[in-house]
Image (tube, rainbow, N blue to C red; front, side):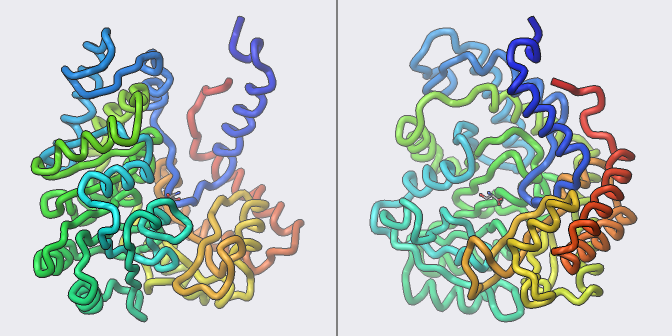
Length: 414
Ligand code: DSN
């Protein structure tokens, strides 16, 4: 019996999701389209195996091939980022961050991390999180011009004497000067951690600075610009290897998801290929086109523009449309973005002033500068005509014509 005969309800939903991905423009900057090879590894028999522990020291029998699989993922990740030690078992980015904190800090220790509305992440100390009750997070912000204010970071480090300085962001669009951060950390005796979840692929592709050689601990997801399966990873100096491994297992997790780790191994092999450097370069070139076009349309670009794959745009201040309304209008037009707070947003997180969007997924489809110009025009049209359903439907039809020219997973059907 085929899969679709056995479970027609699920098949319908999967095919609908495939069609949504094919016919629309995926502009959420943390999303991407994995290769067929990554999908195949993710759906492989590696999902059947329990393998608590680490290579050669597992708590279950039958792990000899799992050791090989995990070993491939680790050695390729080391090569990609120049890491001394890699743990590929974190289930995703948030667990990776929590494991890293628990490995190198004690409860009550102070962490200097970026404020969420300035581009940080919930796990970087937002009061709603579990970790905010365990560690003393002090949150810094970007300067008025949108850059990281290293003088202020230093002043805050001298005042609060953190045990850890944390950089690396989810909605921030500029480069980070890791050497400056490291110098500040050294001055106050703090450890350094970078969360490169968003930009790991740009770093692997040689397009952005790499904190791994400099910083004590670096965390990432593997499914964003890195274009692998949904998962997490910690890269660290050898001095922290034992503590990191213990924190992940048995500290926080049980059996690793070895199918995801197999898929990571494939994605890392892909990222080591020269073509991945072209991909990373095109992501940034495409984002620059969006920056230029949105500026010309009169939008306020948070942080003054972009050095990476994403833009955070103040749609409320620029066009009088809320982030939620802009997201909903863009959805109707076939463009997926996410509503997002802008720095010190006066509005609520459920209906903030901004939208966040980026180019990793559309670049994977092969779209380049010419398509970005079209996309920016459609996005602006959808935002300024947010209540005009007929207009939004006509944009969706134009987008379908475009996406038909950039096939996604040709031949795939559930
Ligand atoms: N959910 C991720 C993102 O979209 O950036 C961060 O956790």
